[in-house]
Structure formats: C-alpha cells, structure tokens
Image (cartoon, one colour):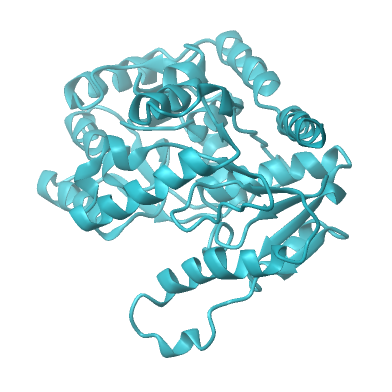
Length: 381
C-alpha cells in the first residue's frame, strides 16, 4: 500500500530544527533500508530540490500553493500553510489510489482524509500543558483542531509513553489502542563537522528560546557561578519574540557577561559544539521526546537535565538530573559539581551505547514500516 507522506509545511523554515530533524532522520532510515520507494512525498516547491538532492530517485509531488499569496500582506504564511494542507493535499490525493496518508507532525492545519486512512505523529500536547502561552481565541482554535486530530485520525503515533498518557488524560473518549508509542529516530552524522567559533571552555544548551524551555532558569543559575568557573554559557537556538525578549531581558538584568547566543547553527556546527562542550544542560519544562540531551550524550558529553514530562523515560535515568526544574540555585550547584567531578568515561560510554541501540535511525524506521504494514494488512482484510 502506498504511503503519502505530507511534508508540505514541515521543511519550509530557513534551518532544520527539532521536527525537521526528526523527519530527516526518519527519511534517512527509510532510505538506508531501501524502502523509500514505498512513499510519495508531498512537499512545497522550495523543499523539492533539497529533498531530491538528498534522496535521489524518491517520488516527490509539489502541493498546490495559495494563488497570489504575494498579495496578502497580513499573515501570508499562515494562510499558505492552511491552503496547502486543507486544499492542496486533498486535491492531490483525490485522484490517487487508496493508501495511507502520513502526517509526521501535528499541525493545526493537517487534513484528515476519508478516502486515505490518516496516521499522524502527535509530538506533544503543549497547548494543553502551557495554555498561558496562547490567547483565548487561539486556544479555542487549537482545541477544535486537536479534537479532529485525536478523534478522527485512523491512528496516532507518539514519541513517548508520556505523550500517550497525556492524550488519554486530556481526551478521555479516545481509544488508547489507536495510539502507538515509537521513540524518535536519532542520527549523528559525524561526517558533518563545521567550525563554530565560540569562547571556551563552555557549557552548552541547544534549545529553542521559548518560555517552556526554561532558559531563563539556566541563565539565573549561570549568573550565580559565572565568577567561580572558567566556562562560558553558549545558547544555541532561535525562538519566538516573547522567548527571545525574556532571555535577553534576563541576561541584561543580571549583568551576565560570559554568554553567547548563536541563533540557528547548521548541523555541522551543532555537532562541533556538542563534541567540544564541557557540559550540556537542558532545563526544559516540557518535552514530548527531548532529542538534544540524547544527542549530546551520544558525544559522551556530561548532560544535566530535568525530570519533567518525557525526559526520565527517554533518557532512561542514565544522565545527571536536578529538581525542581525552576530552582536556579539547585541547577547552579549541580553544574559546579559536574564541572568539578564529571562522570567517568565508562559511564558516559555506557549511556552512549544504550542510546545508539534504542534510537538508531534505521531500527526506528523499521518500527515505523512494520507498523504501516500492520495497518495495511488490517485494511486489506
């Protein structure tokens, strides 16, 4: 059975971030297993040449875009996203033979098809757990869209047991059997190494600069110890205006001097930063999976993170932790402890081996394929 994989609004940003990295890791796994020909990728036109270069021979179809989008000065991208998903994708699939429609991201705009059983990767219920991040109007829209995703989709894939439990808690009428947890694929491409000039030695954090990532707590903790250690704090990632403003405001108000904000970096630059970090810190309050602490651990870097949401499950209690997550004093204390007495090499190597086996991109891609096969068999009966 053909699998129509909708990427029309996933890989359109200027750089590859969390969801985009998940998608590429998954596609890399399908390609490595020789199974990419089972898919037809539905994309917007800007992504087509990038995907053809990375996956030569793959079947790619461009989703129709919003006509005369350049004439819309107000929220043009918002309308383009909804047009591609709600009109463009159904138009394309209307003439295709029956197959699975796979959305690897839980966007508000996703099309749940009647003809093509629709499988959606629902990465988290952030809007439920952090409603203060949205206006009342947006919360109503999100609730309507997510009810459609949860109740009308054929099946849901989630990246952790935590997300499955969260869905069942917030949507009690959903059948838990339609939700399958498959951990995200992770691929570290050591061939991708690019220089990234930052002062050293340094403590690293790779996270979007959004409120729930809790970067303000990390800055407050670093301010407590800045004069006690030789290290700089390197913050990698972009954010929304509110998150950026909060981070910059905290840095200014505390007078933190040894901090570098890189913004977006390439995969090669990120790998270089991982490799050379003295300590990786992720103070996040909410993760559906939590990829970056695992990525850092794959480089055998000491990692300090929280026990919030999915992180204990995904990291398998193999890293360093602090709690409560918003306690900057505890975080500062643990940072100093680990910098003074880092875990031994065998402990770090042991965690790396566990993660390599658990989240290997080819093995995870195989789990997805086996799941799609089981769905196809059920539909053919």
